[in-house]
Amino acid sequence: MMPDIITGSVIDILSCIAEIAILLWFFSRKNERRDIGDDPVRKVIGFLPLLVLLGIYMTPLNAAVSVFSLENLAIQLLRMILHLLPVMCWLLLNKECSVPVAFYLSAIFTAIYLTAQNLRMVMMTYGTVTPPHQAKGAGYVFGLVIVAATELILAAVTRKLIKPEKIDIIDSQRTIMMSTVLLIMVYFKWILTAVRELNLGGNRVTMISFSLVTSIGLYLVILLFDYSRLLLKEKEEAEHERMVLQYEVRSAQREMQASDDIRRLYHDVKNHLLAIQSMSGSEGEINDYLSELLPKFEGYETQVKTGNQTVDAILSEKIQLTHADGIRFNICLDLASLGHIRTVDLVTIFGNAVDNAVEALRKLDDKEEKYLYIKSAAFAGNIVIRFENRFAGRVEMKNGVPVTSKKDSDMHGIGIRSIENAASRYGGTVSVKADNENRQFTLIVMLPAGM
Image (cartoon, rainbow, N blue to C red):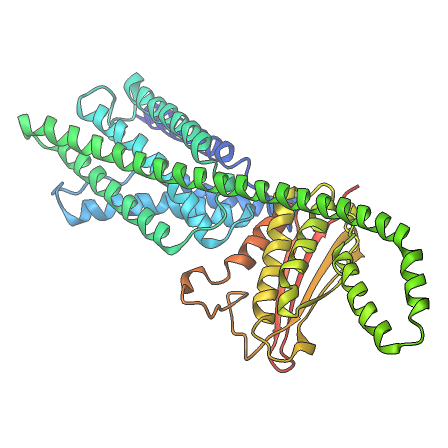
């Protein structure tokens, strides 16, 4: 008896190690936390939550006497929680993700686990593999191998389709949906556990088939839902890239037009000076003439030079679009060392930052306050970009972002969150400050400088 127990324990430990290996591979592309670095103590502590998974394998919870009981349902719910919480804690300690994202990703992995376990339960019901309380023989080992293989296949398909590393924002609707799906999957696991213990005749096959198909169907719902969200996100990124190309083309066209105009004006400047000289006796005519001449030079001030063509195009476009609103820009940027930042991320950072500031400046009555200051400075191997603007009324902060005054309150802070997500891909940081006393809003983005 003792050798069988030892053998069973060793197999359980190996199964747990296999699941942890699948977990590490599944989330291997997710960005590591920046504050861990090479600290071995922090790395060890970060892996401690995964030891809780041994509780599921080493101390299986047996069914109650009454299989269709709330006690059995509670046991299955506890097993699901014992799987979800350690994975969630591990993600929070080791990966760059928020609590909602950590919950959602750990729920996806737990759904994979439940689907594999439900398949094993069906195999035990038909006698294909040995139940856990008979932890000996090839049947028991075969069952655990099937679970590990199924988890690996499902994890590979899931990682290929939904790309967990790209899931960085989770809304409340997705959290509720995932929680509901997990609870339903636990419910059908409870049914499978009960059916395995009962002799229900022909109804047994029907209940097993329905429970397994429904459980797999729920997993596919999650998979297809996230896959559709990924396709939508990639479409939005493609749209960003298209906008970038438009910015660059417009910037190039403006520069070419400006060069042609300057060359023409250079040839005409002598004639203009002669005309001014001939009208020197009439001050009014000179003023009228200069009034017609000076507008020809308007627009050249919008040519921004930051060392990055994409940012030049974005800012030049924003300046021209907001000229009619009386909004003035004070720009002092040196971004030549940000060549390693993806174009789409630069568009996200500067596009959202300027759009948010312009929206606030348009609400001001005093034209003298309609200034947007954009400055950069090098600091400790980083480029610190500072956006400053005035605002009307008061700005309330919630979870580190300003609360919007728009009717669509569910979208509040999306612009700031998008900037944070873009900066975090390179180990950058974002800070926001709203000084209600001086009505001054400040957004600081720090990005690592390239080599």
